[in-house]
Amino acid sequence: MGALDEVTSWPVDQVGAAAVLPDGSVQRAGDTDRRFPLASVTKPIVALALHVAVEEGSIGLDDPLGPPGSTVRHLLAHASGIGPDDDEVLAAPATRRIYSNRGFELLGAHLRDASGIDVATYVREAVLQPLAMTATALEGSPAHGAVGSVEDMARFAIELWRDDPTTVSRPTRDTAVSTAWPGLPGVLPGFGPQDANDWGLGFEVRGTKAPHWTPDGASARTFGHFGRSGSLVWVDPVARCALVVAGDRDFGEWAPAPWRRLGDAVLAAAT
Image (cartoon, rainbow, N blue to C red; front, side):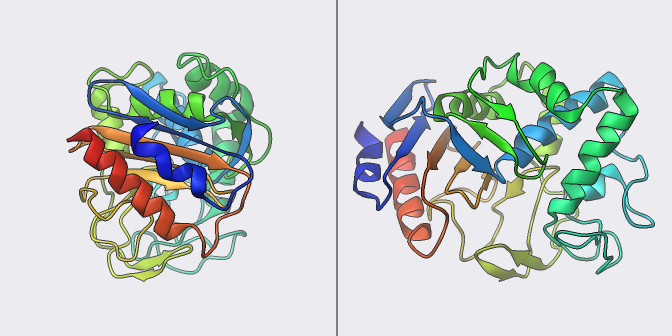
């Protein structure tokens, strides 16, 4: 197991973890084939499908969507001003980062209406099948309804840092994982207010956030997502490594410190 030894001591009944190292090798611990709820780690999967749709011409990043003045781009970056779980408008677009499940539900509906294909099918055909993510499916909300295995999510992580991504072009991938509207303040769920709550287009960007759930040694360019179900995926494009974890204990006070320690062990193995 190497870098992932610590995961076996976590207070979790079932857990799987995979570390992708710079040479492309994958270290594994626990049950990496078990299907776990991915919760909000659903969002980057759906976001990648949306970026495929942009390249195919089904939708555009600047399509109006959500509150007045908001677009697909704003919703992907949690910068539309829409509330977390309903259509209440809490801020003008691009003035504050408000993490919104509702925003991803609007994105899913927009993709369905524009393409004529339901979002679960689009995600399967645009992302899951090309990446051989055979254990993963969107079974509910595009904000939090996917289930999948760590093995599948390791393939997803590799897609996000490889030089030649297969689902979208490299410029599209790079835009997705780079900060949109840098410096917007907001609350990072589980970690409190952040003066610069940086997000890309469907992916959280670490930036200067503190406290945070990625390892202490991670670069500012590190990006990914975590979910309430205890799932996480992050990629550090500077260290060229990634970590995926899924388990059967929800995120809580127990999680941040072990997550960071495990991540630092992965970074150490990558050097």
